[in-house]
Amino acid sequence: MEALIAAGEVRVNGQVATIGTRIGPEDRVTVSRRPVRLNFAETLPQILLYHKPEGEIVSRDDPAGRESVFGKLPRVRGAKWVSVGRLDFNTSGLLVFTTSGELANRLSHPRFEVEREYAVRVVGTLSEDQMRSACREIQLEDGPARFESIRDNGGEGTNHWYQVVIKEGRNREVRRMFEALHLMVGRLIRVRFGIIHLPPRLKRGHFVELETADVGKILQWAGMVPQRPRQSTAQRPGRGRPGRPRQAPGKSSRHTAKT
Image (cartoon, one colour):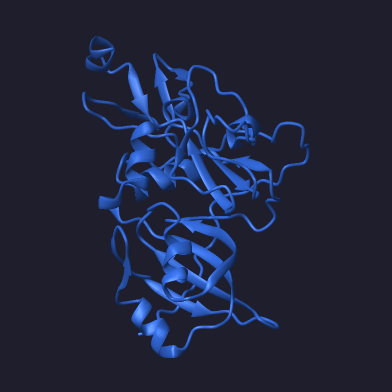
């Protein structure tokens, strides 16, 4: 290849290439005037979003024999799905899977402080003072915790909804934080993980695999690659569930901190 480049036989977008010329998915490359097809999609990991229902465990091996989320995922050739964090048995919502262990680590390790956003239904309500205090510190048995933000979403009767954001992924953390505030959690739904949102039309128990362009955005956000892929791979439908919607990371949602 270096000999061909030195001889001026390699062109990028019609211009003669030199050693070190960088190319991306949007570039047109020819060698001796013949076009070269470059499949950048194969170099990117796969990312899949799954809407976990309650009653499924995020583990491949469960002595109790409970239904696993991994049994719902499509097979990947020469790789395996790695979950980005977990959701407990009674929690529903967004689960992110990838074939890249490095990406899973960057998104879930505490030192990266990736935001997790949840919709929480509790029995009872919090006062303004309690919400301000919860954004400063809540004492748990395994150390202090706090909400990055908490928003009152209203409710009916004794049930009340809150939207909360945390930057940790400790076991049952959101539930334990509300218990410390003397409120019992009835439902807990994760709606966002970092820049990845739960697609609004993705039904419980269904999944959607992200297209190449969206995978590239997430990798850039995680600081892993400089590529800016434009072309998309074909959408892969969920097993046994035809007509899966084509989804990408959702738009940013707003959340208000009570300070």
